[in-house]
Image 1 (cartoon, rainbow, N blue to C red):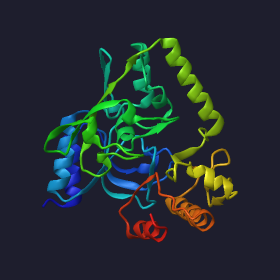
Image 2 (spheres, one colour; image 1 turned 45 degrees about the horizontal axis):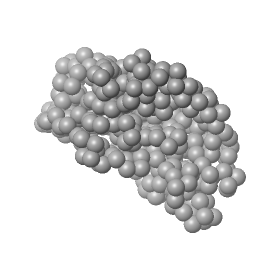
Image 3 (cartoon, rainbow, N blue to C red; image 1 turned 90 degrees about the horizontal axis):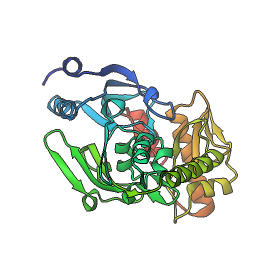
Length: 314
């Protein structure tokens, strides 16, 4: 086995765009997170496969991410490789009523291309901060619509093979899909949309955006809703009932605008976010008898981060 640091130097030289010892706080919407060993920004599917194969052969930890919109990274970082699918991997093409997008394409880009071709159905996606791959992975959605309503097929690789996943294979669930439970990295997504008047598409998008601006802290750094719905009710409803809006642990604060959001007021740490989430979870259990489940994903490779997460039942 090649020594880990040497291995990553070799890998870095073989790829077009890499960033060693990169702070992941720069790559999460909540702005929290220490360094990873190597950030890989692939341009091609071949680079994704090469990265995965390299990590496996040399026993290096690796993970995948998009815009980091639901990610809380440990303050000590991640002792491995992060494959970030973003602008370098964001082509979008249209064939008839089908739109094909690479996993790194933003929801806004998919919406704009769809609108240009008079295709409706992804207006909700334009208001989400996730990339297409991340949105599929977590079955992201809002206002009664989610990815499972518009995605027809997904192509993904585990480094060795490329596999086509039909809708039934994706196993969409509430904020869940098969890609949360396997090692495949999404490369392309096929959307089946409907021919729609462009004015109607624009109107629907503006309605959703206006509502989100009025009800969510879009001007603050956050990872979106930190907890999933419980019994079909927004976690924010329960948190609001507890009178916890504005409650802080350090610079991590429960949003005054939407109780389901935890925002970073400038210097929040992952430890503060997890402690705050633990307080919310404990009080909801005591008051309402419910157990809130995290919607955010935790990423870290230090014992301290694991212990902290375990202590609060995450």
